[in-house]
Every structure is written in structure tokens, then in C-alpha cells.
Image 1 (cartoon, one colour):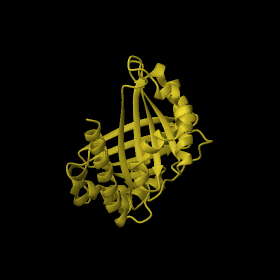
Image 2 (cartoon, rainbow, N blue to C red):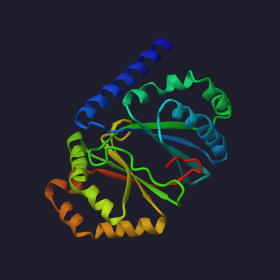
Image 3 (tube, rainbow, N blue to C red):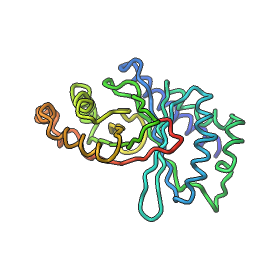
Length: 258
């Protein structure tokens, strides 16, 4: 049973690496991103924060991985999601991360309380992960100033098939991303999903000084003449290339590197 599980994990990692390498051929110099999300009760957040800040992020630094942004999304019923955006220079680092963390004695020691949680009292209900390659228009992370107040907007654009997904990415590369920058929709990352849920999708993260700035930037964007012209092109009509949009507001953790 253990051997089958190992083979399944190894094959999955190889598939991600192969897909990422194929994308890298068309996007030289592009970074890779993982969005890792913990779903948990609010009471468990201090334990997760301690693990991420004292064990996980320091271990990634030793491996040459990062920066790492950590954000919180508050949900009803005293539940929340903690989202980590992890920057990888190469896909192989993602594929081998769990093995290297398991072999890192400093990580194991610093994260002992989190790693040794009992089944009867888990830290989280689940972890979800998606893996991305940066798009041509923003091949590397645009790192915000972590010393200033900031609010993050995570958006996921799903498409009904792969061709439509590529068309939405093309739209950003050929004009929409430039409009974003001009009107104050400040990009942090734009990634094409290589593995994870709700594929195919384009996922991106924006940063604002606060909620008022976010609303103003989106209002300016919606009325922008260049945007109105671009979205009027039949090949870029939303109904033809975007099937669903997920919009999430995230607050950075005090120890977030983004």
C-alpha cells in the first residue's frame, strides 16, 4: 500500500514538473507559484501561524524558495482560510518540497507542535494546493512593500476549455494588464494553472492600500476607454472565454513577506 502511494505521489510530481517545463520553454525566465490554503477554526490560527512563521518559512529560505506571502480570509461560523503564496524559481523545487521538509531537522523541531497534532484534535480540516506558471506579461512577482498597510484581492478566472483559457491570458498579455497598472489595479502575480482545482484557470493577486483604494481602482477600470474598447472585441468577449470568476479579499499576516 505504501509503495503504491509513493508511486502515485512520484508520478503526480513528475507530471507537474513535465507540464511546468513545457510551459517554461514558451516563457523563459518565468517564476512558479503555489497557492496553499489551510481551512481551519479560528481558535487554531495561533498554532498555524507559529508553524508558518517559525518553521515553514525559515525552512523554505534555507532551500532557496520564496518569498512567501501569508494571508487570512475570514469566513462565517468562526472559520477561516489561511492562504500562502509561495514563489518557486523552478518547478523541481515544488515537486520535491515535502521530501526535503521531512528531512530538515530544524523544520521538524521548530514545527513539532503543528506536525505532531493528534487526529482527535487536528490543526486544520484540509489543505488545498494549486500550482502556476507566471504569464508572459508578468513573468516575475511584483513584490509589494510589506511595511505599508495593504489589502490583497485574489481573483480566479475559470474557462470552459483550454483554448478559452489561453485566450484570456492572451487578453491580459496584449493590453489588459497595462490597463490594470495604469488605473491602480496593482498586480502582484498572474499565474496560469498547471495543477489544482477548477482548471483551466488564470489566477492573479492584486494589492491596494485599503478597501477605498480597491473600490476606486475597479470603478476607474470599468469606465476606462481602453478597457471598453478591448472587451468589445468579439474574440475577447467574457461570455466566450470566462465561465466563472471567484473574488476573494485577503489580509496579510504580520509575518507575511508580501
